[in-house]
Image 1 (cartoon, rainbow, N blue to C red):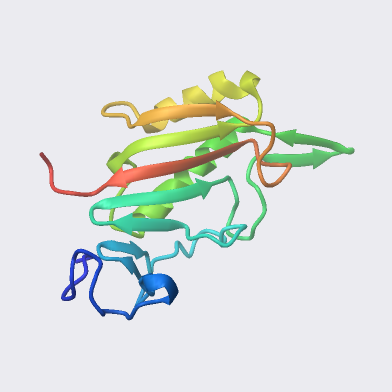
Image 2: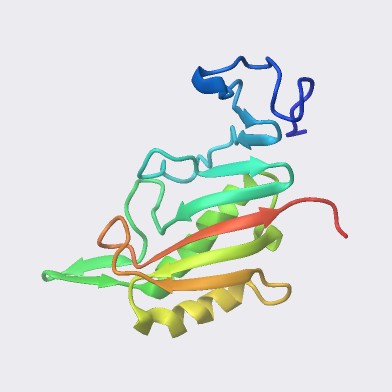
Length: 173
């Protein structure tokens, strides 16, 4: 399992040692009892652009960092350049973002059906209808809660959609 075996579940004790100021030190991927960084980085996806994990797992809950339409080679899906004109396809990028989230979840033995909450960031409010249509193709019944935020920009100028997700893989109620 993903829990911590042995040691004091309250976070006290000496397992893993004490850091300066009494803080717990990381041991074998364990950040706190029951909270782990996954050892499964989706190999089909590029590494995150910043210094953060692709996902964190706390018990039966998976927290997925912002995922974009980046392809394994680092390029961004849904971008074309012709005669100095750049075209960014929100439909194609939305599909890739959701496929990339599915790939991350598959590495944890889950699927998009496990998502309980998704936050989506769009760079243009005019893209909402097209993005919403694609989103509906992936989530028809028992859809996760969702928040959509219009932002000024994402980490790369060719990105028009990014999403973060929370998935729960516990036993059925």
